[in-house]
Image (cartoon, rainbow, N blue to C red; front, side, top):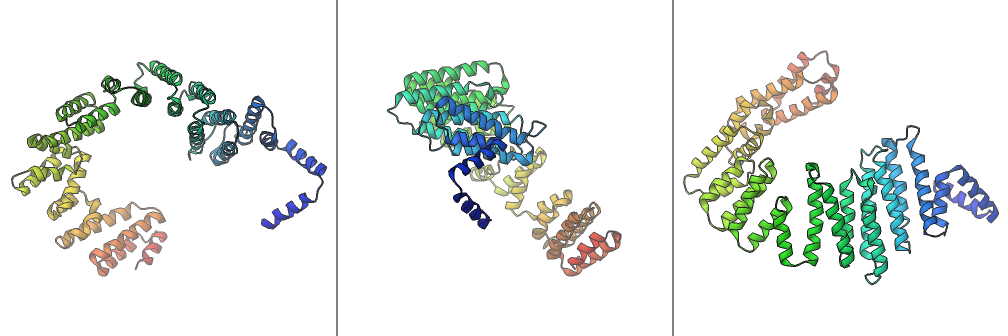
Length: 457
């Protein structure tokens, strides 16, 4: 490949300027993307022409990949995104900040539009848009602070872009653009415009419960502005007004804990539990916050009750908390908790139950669990075999037999054989050989299975 490249270079070096121009012109006429790429890179026209040429190049790239159906298939998406990304990378050394921004905006807009006409299963289009946003942020943060005119024009372009209809179903990108605008919040006029734009966007989201995540992200930007350019009273007033959003409730609880106002932290957490009673994840967060406040106040009885709630909700760490608080017989506590976990009969309680019996090395309870759930025998066989050898081997054999009966291809046969290898570590060679012989008899019409069994003898 290197030799071929060297030969081409040698040939081109031997040609006259006129011949080179003719060759390049001929290739350009045959390849629209190549022609537009040349024009973008070497045409030194004004801003308007440069942007127009970039749009034409993007159009030729899209045309190159979409095919007759007007859609970029999975196997072509990476190539498309890579070529589009090159437009951003080639633009990194641009001397004109506003032109550089405009070109990145054009690429970003097409990237967002491409979600509608490309298979983005591997996330290549998303990567392209995120790269454009990252480059935009880099440019915004690197502008000369003293060049107020350029900064204001840069800000206005970003703000206008954030209002584009292309972000109608892609609020996360719109929000990222608005966050980039905070780079200019030191300018009072820009700060006021940004705040107005965010408040307008939130007004459009009123009565739409599906926009709550977007609203919270927008409020966090406003909060950042208030923290940086407002006073303490403004900050606290804003937080109180927006406590229904988890970010602000969490912030308020953290500040209450830092100021040692633990009673207020408890009130905030309890209100959160009431508000978010349909959201288990948030309820657990507020309960955990309330627990920490109880701990600071040395309210041990309240701690005990709440630690048990959190434990039964699936947070195993609270068992150690319970043990440290419990002043009676620890074995009695263990048995009571086991009974409650089994009675709860849900997946989160079961996870705590399994962690608990494992940490306590409760072989009797483990064996009981395996009897009820024989498919988990492999997980417990090593620990149980010394005390329950015959029963463990019997359950293990039945499990292997069940897996063998439901296997129908070589990959599944290999999995059964891997299981047999692990069984050998528990029961020994003789017992493994006996099972293999039985399987060979039972499945003598499955040559692939027999082949795999032969390999582990």
